Image 1 (cartoon, rainbow, N blue to C red):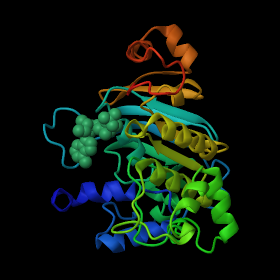
Image 2 (spheres, rainbow, N blue to C red):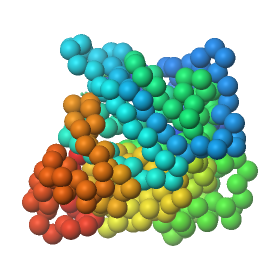
Image 3 (tube, protein in one colour):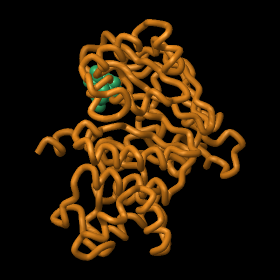
Image 4 (cartoon, protein in one colour):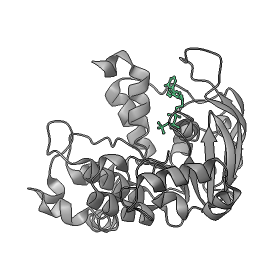
Length: 313
Ligand code: ATP
């Protein structure tokens, strides 16, 4: 089985399902009988709950090479610097393999920068206890991990002790309540391996409900809506908009709809940020983003906003 041959990759996949709490994070590693690749540094401290800059994310000259990278010629990220302010929506676009997803891995310190620093709330992530860092970040990734347990239990991993009313409010906001109610046992339906099988869009909306329950300051979205049909894509998109509201959002974007309204768009190419600005600024600049945009618009005659605009990234 490929997963067993590449345990680190398996960890990353599962770990990225970080819409959950630190407690779940620990449980996932228990479950896999594996430990996080990067342990806390000696002297690491918890992030103070009331840090004034909570929600701020900064990359300062970050260069990064995967430990198992072959062909050592080129780093995956090369001297990447940016700062996302609390509450901002930042989108990362660029060609496949440019390094966008890698940026999202470095924020919760799944990997460590080879040079430069990643800062969270103004603190170098290496100085922070991972558990406390992860407690402030929610992730909706391309794969949602569900335990073999009821939907209610799967949701409560994000917030132990959440009341049924809280679960339902989050599920409603994530556009998944009605769907859950249509399952054989509602919130008591057992899902996960050998359980009731959820579609990709349904799983993503469960992931979004978890983020809403967890209520972190930072949301990382690794879009994967290409696998969804247009209707569930819209439903998921609406739920994502709700989840992004009022928190710093780092969106690894593959579609135009999420990019156009972003506060700032970073264009990544060959591990470097080659351009940044708003949609309008970047279009006017006529550079890499404008080319990506026109390419995508050309590939999708029906799509101005949303819909099946194809892959920009
Ligand atoms: P896409 O849009 O296709 O998802 P991306 O911009 O998100 O691409 P990344 O997933 O960040 O790109 O990958 C950047 C580079 O790092 C790629 O060349 C990829 O093959 C490589 N890479 C990704 N994960 C690993 C890993 N675990 N070990 C070694 N190399 C990796």
